[in-house]
Image (tube, rainbow over all chains, first blue to last red; front, top):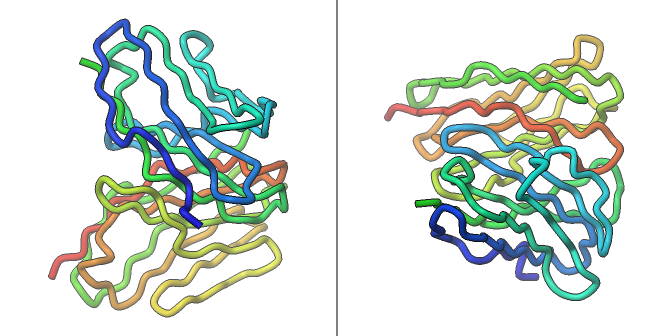
Length: 115
Length: 112
């Protein structure tokens, strides 16, 4: 089991460009979560997805950010027209179908730098 | 929504001493309380967790206690070692699904 795979590990974008972050959950996991970690801060929930469904996007900024988890392929977090404040580490986590008290496994993260 | 507060934000201890990190939460329906350790530049990794039907859990040098009435839980690290230096996050799962709310983190420094 390769664990939660995120790519790229590091991403540099100029202001105004688009950033696409990918997350492949662990085998057997159908739930994906995205978290953002600003420098020297904790992790903030962004969105929770199941295959082809967004379950909770209460932590997503209302503009420029979107997420999907298609039937086939990885989950994608998309940031349009990036700004300097988007610079952060973005972590994806996955878990098996809900049991209520299971560990969420984190990927290595994508460190986005906006220049 | 759930509100998790974590103290202290930084903690320095001498090698061999104990370290204690405390968290409080707001949602009485919360039922799962994991603790994560994050080393610099790496992903958070689960180190111990506790469920709402248990008051205390221990794993070698690490222990977690839970007081559901007071809505607080704590991480205890005994005989600290330099490799324990990291940021520690408490987290709370309110039971609907794995929407985990994290504390702000505690940066632990163990001084050799």
